[in-house]
Length: 189
Image 1 (cartoon, one colour):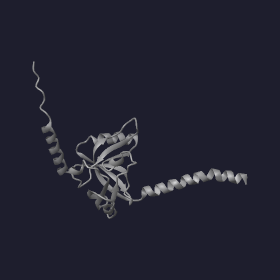
Image 2 (cartoon, rainbow, N blue to C red; image 1 turned 90 degrees about the vertical axis):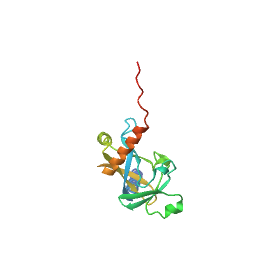
Image 3 (cartoon, one colour; image 1 turned 120 degrees about the vertical axis):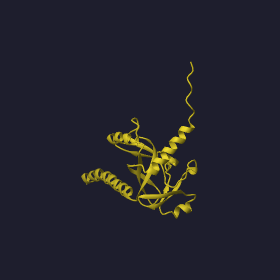
């Protein structure tokens, strides 16, 4: 009997860990995958690990709302393509949304988790991403998995070439930024 008790005492924690892992894995695999354009990259920080930090560029979210709190979003479109991400004002409206997203206060970015994200990658991949992120003629796309409760997880990052429209918008923005810069100071002798 003593031997059986020891065996159960040794196996029970392992079975519990295996069960927790299976539940966690099942939850991770549930949900709808969406592709979200991103901007504003910081490819990695050697002191804290390898990851890509980015800002979500939600389609349809106008710039006037960028300074306002963003706690909830309702996604529209056919997965994986988002046509519009619209802020939701209350829980009733969020409950009727077919694809809700909620900011996670416990995440790395807390209440800003709908604005900023982080995707962990291996060291070799971080170096390759750093080079791709510096190419102004590419657009970063992050795949997120959105679950029914509104939580979401960034899964992967990929790149595509900018469309002609995106290139024109980028160039116009660069021109506006240059116009706002003060002229260089004159050198006098």
